[in-house]
Image (cartoon, rainbow, N blue to C red; front, top):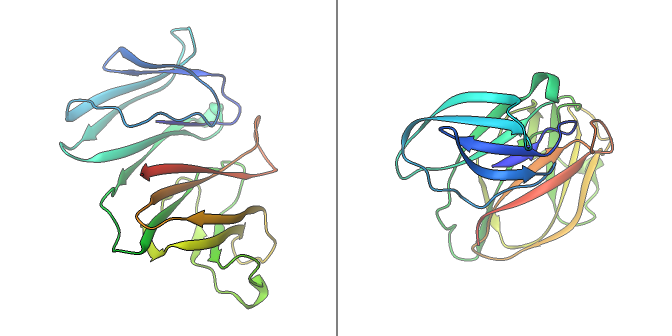
Length: 195
């Protein structure tokens, strides 16, 4: 579970009305939680209250890992549910996936390059990614990378990860997020799907 609603307070998370997480702050995330398969009711409440901001029934398949993101501004908050592939990449590689979780940003292009590469000459790795969408996992050699996000069709960088060193065998999800309260400056939240 990930709290990515920038103007929402801390939240409690309930599965089938049993509280599983309490007082999760903005950009807080949990480790994987084991729940029964089948249709599960997920509620996200303002921390310490019975005020529910998300009430969703999610079909969960046995043996499958998911990331559930409380996304959007609180006035339009909804779950973003993505299925995780935690299988190890090929020897010497890493796997990384991007999720557009910044509700104040338009559709974006995402560049995954060597650190300091000139974007003017680069082709986006992912193009026109809308809010709430997740890419497939990209499998690439381990090493140093820089992730930059621009409005779709533009070379103006709105998120810059700086140099990220990724070790062989790692599986990562990168979520684009608003600043606290909503809007720019935008940032990235990095989740460890595997090691």
